[in-house]
Length: 628
Image (cartoon, rainbow, N blue to C red; front, side, top):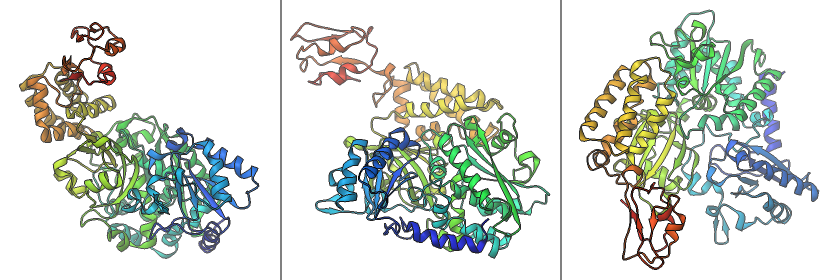
């Protein structure tokens, strides 16, 4: 069983054994100690689905064939961030980055790079190759402006290897808290750091801890919300898959600070890889004296158990999550009392999400001033975003608060593909709002986003270009909310359904000007009358998109047109006579025989038969078919 002293000794030994693959200070690759080469393969859910297991098998087979086992160490690690290039392989020393890997290419990587000491340039991530020079991937546009704090272990260590986590300063913050700090000193450090909750509205984390600490009770609980349900969001999943021990360590620190001896991790069952890695992390931590009785020989007792959620979006709301942990239907309840006073089984409960906890160990180790030195005056530190949609580099990023949306999209995200123009970005998922191009240079932090009608939320960031219809996008998010409403309160259960019907009316070409006033009025009623924060924010995408793109709503309601050409019922397809060459290709691909005409003569489209599928537009080489 580990003690504080032999934990430090193990950390130093492991650091020498594994080398530091990534400097936490400068993001610079370092030389490995035990092997000539360390080959890191991304093994998170995204890369697993794109074939990383075949990559690992091919590498192992080639290494064994060439008898390189003593020289080459192959490790499965967490997310590297740039998911659009998966599966990813990175070779140390040097940090050579191979993207979009194929199993059949691994023999070349082994024979040319690992045996011949010559990186295979044509297989490297193109941003790392400049003429004859190979640039460290940490210096490329995607990584250069990032600050990986919550993600500091992802893509660096083997998730299931406790020693590797310890070698990267794992559990050192817990040891410091238990052996050198009082409970109040831990809370003061978190409070002074300026860390705000990374799962929603950004409530000050230290203040929440302080509230829970002050409540007198024989039993208290610490809980972790790992039930992210926003479309396109996978920040918490990636942290757990890349470094599950960080959640275990942070919850143990939180338990010590507030006076709790038991914790619950509430995670959706749809995250099987994350769940298995958490289970192994908890088991290994118990076996080594980092969980359970007398942790690190300090006399402190704390343990954790996992609760699986069924994927209900409403269970992201803290009181609904607590009800689900207790085995009840996941429905919110009125507040106050807040969980800090009456939470799990009626006892005082501290609840934070995965990303919030992931920031706790480095704050304890490095101090409040270190964390507070990043970000803006009211939003300290860095934030993880899952960036997707109409952007070149999709994936997971962590950036300092205060970075502009333009920097995120253009420099880190690689810009909007296909020469298209940036139109807007949706932050905060179904509870958030859109940021239009007029606010492209807004510094991203909690207060700035609220001021322009959006919110930080958990960190989903969906980029939209000129081809996106904002009425259709608002409908997309609202449709999700309608499906996920728990139904407990009428404003959310009925109001969102009626709101969706009004948007459907616009999209189907049946709208009228009066509908716009009805939409705005209904949004306000839902906002002020719903029971929980999820209902209160359900209309946010509609409100913000109407605010910035009202002309599109007017076009749908009054002119019965979709300016972006997305809403099928508002489109008309026709053939320009001057351009039609009578090749008959459009008629041959039309699934409803709506196009007629003779060879080398102008064709026509029967609007009654046309289902507006768009296949004819795609196939027409002269570009004679247009839609309006």
